[in-house]
Amino acid sequence: MKLLLIGTSEASQLFILNALSNALKSLFEGHDLSLKLILISHLKIDENFLFIENTYSEIQYLDRLSQLKKINKESYDYLISIEDSLLGLIASKKISAASKISFKRTLGSFVFTKIVRQVQKRKIQMLSLEDLSNLVASIFSHSMEIKPKFHLENMLVRKNHEMIHWIYNTNYAVDLTNANYVLMDFDFSTLQKNRQLEMITNLSEQLIEKFKLKIIFATHHIEDYNQIISSGKILTKESFINSKQKSINAVTHFPLFNHSDLIITNKFENTSILELLNKPFYLIKDKNTARKLFTAKTFFTKLKNKTIGEVSYMLKSI
Image (cartoon, rainbow, N blue to C red):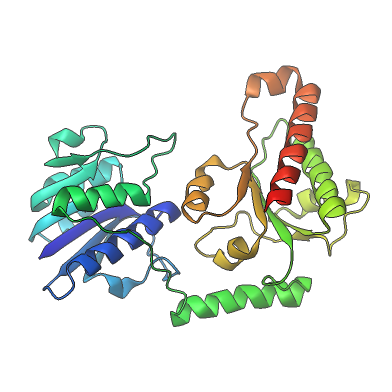
């Protein structure tokens, strides 16, 4: 049996690839299975808790049309695509397979022999474990529970996790496993950055004072961190910690995500992997640019009060 999977290197895609690959290997255990993978990515992926190279017979990377000619010209029994890029669509068209399967996508009916219905349509195209169960049942007429396999026992993964724990314990005296902390990961707008920083200052002070926890703040801009900590009345470098990262990735910084009480972010695109990991998070929605521009003070006052109230309620419930 020859199967080819096509996906991307985005965190939620790696989660779905992990779960699907695990299910296929379990389904065809005892059979001669060749499971290959094409990743729409311009960078080679380091092994992590979701992705281990030897899971697949072969991995090929694509990031531009000119690389299509390098794709192996062998035929497959099944081609299963879980991504929706134009490059992935063209690659699926070029590759020979007896059966080509994907979920609903633009022009998909011209390339794939079977389109699987997605359980719940989302603003961001994100598959769920339930979608995978439907896919396996639809293709192979077999019902099974689909679960990811976290590769926490892998040596490279373990060393990376140990390094992250060591960094926070050594530099910030924070034992990630036992500390109570909230992780904040933000993008700042140019026009309203000072109001956003003020909101984070007020939110952080409320959470530290009320819940006696620490805040790990994701930024590599020391001036942003200094502005917050200097304007706060009770913020210290021990309670409000600069992660020194522009952004924190769930795949590479899994221990930081895993041990946090809550993740607060305004990055909608990152919420998909948090949902898949069943990690509590709060999404700050402040994208209404018209209101922010003309009634900025009122807008951010309401947003601040709403955020403080809802985050406090979540922390009480966790």
